[in-house]
Amino acid sequence: MNFIVLIITLLFAGCSSTSDLKVTPIPNTSSLEEQLQIMSDDLAFARQSDIHILSPNFFISAEESFLAAKNDKDLSREKKFDKLGYAHASLDKAKSVANTARTELSTTIKSRVDTYRVGATLKDSEVSEAESNFRELVVDIEKGDLKDAKEDAPEVERQFRAIELRLIKNKYLAQINSIMTKAKKLSEQNDNITRTSISATQKEIKLLEQYIQKHRYDDNNIAIIGSKVQFLARRTLNITKQSIQIKNDGPQKTALRIEKLLVRLRNSTQSVLKDSRDMTFEQQAFEVEKFIHAVLKLGKNITQQRSHLTDKVEDLKTTVADTQQLKEQKEVEVSVLQMRQKLVNDVRAKFLSTEADVYLQDDNLIIRLVGVGFRIGKDTINENSLPVLQKLSSVLTELGKRKITVEGHSDSTGPLEFNDALSLARANSIRDYLINEQVTAEDLIEAVGYGPSRPIDTNDTPAGRAKNRRIDLMISLTPASTM
Image 1 (cartoon, rainbow, N blue to C red):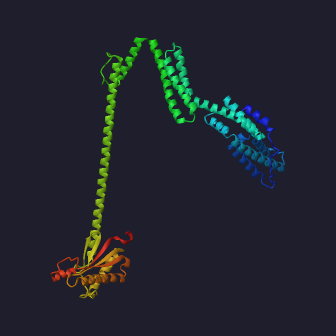
Image 2 (image 1 turned 135 degrees about the vertical axis):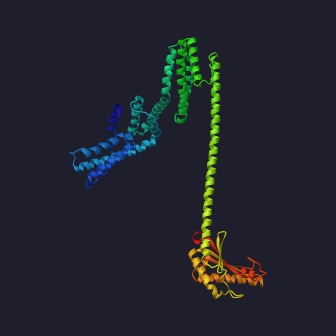
Image 3 (image 1 turned 60 degrees about the horizontal axis):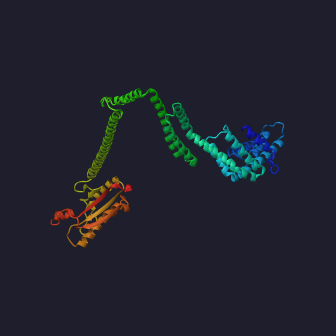
């Protein structure tokens, strides 16, 4: 706190009303150390909330009472608790005053916060003065003079806003003005040699200043405009320096210097350009310009070709990836087919050729029960078929839980309705046998009868009709638990 603020605080400290403090005694049976810690934490939080700024005197009163309770060894335990009670009452009052200030001086408080946000410090005399005036406002509220505080607040707000604007302008204009000061000084020392350039740049500076005046919080656009104006300021300084050098060197020396610069440009092309010193400066510059355009065009073509090649490489990568994926997919398919064929061979090996035929059909394993017979015109299984069914049960148990369809087929002898019913009945006989033998569950096996609709041989001969009268088991190769 600077000297002026300290004097104001001290002058008004005695004027702050303490008669209305509501002191709540703290029982001296409490832990003194615990109560000191509570008060210390409350003061720290209040300081973080700017209570010491918005109600300085009541906050000081609270802090002094706390420090006395903490550090004064001459005070009795009872007096220390009294001090802590007074500290709590003073801090509560400070919080109340701060709340009033935040309500009644909201725009003034905001202007103060905004000013410090852009870098204000108390070392700045204008900031110090505005801060002192702000302290007077909050002290008025502490004394109960709310009317005086509200009347004086607009002027304090104006002070802070003016400082804020000055600091924002200084942030963006200080370096620009420093560069232009150098340019003007050099120009004035040489008969105002670059008056026109300096004047033009000063107009741009004025426009930037006016923009800041109207849009002080538009940081993004101010920064963009400020960068452009700073470039113009640097350019103006360099034009001034070059103009002075040309004035001092004279026409011939200046011409030779420009020629030397053009030669350096030409040499940088690695002798692609011919010696053009017999041309005017404009012609020489035009030759260099044509070369630059040609290089840029070449660079653009190279970039396009590179992009095209990159696209082709990506296409090739995609093709390779697709090919690899197809290859891997094919390998998986071959592996699956080999596994299925092995399964067919293993199952086929369980039966004699006169008992069953085994083969693949799509995603199903087909077991054709050649050795299973029924009584003529009946669905009763012949006893000599039981060994085949026992082998079938063993095979199905090894295969695990799978969906099974038992298909019954007949020859074309007799009425169609009879053959359809008989083929279904015989299929159900096989289904019932497998369920009764606990080979499979009811919900995993079904029976269908196709009658004579799906012959595998001719019905014109006894041998052909015998083949058509059959039972086929269609077993899914996908385990039932994953279906």
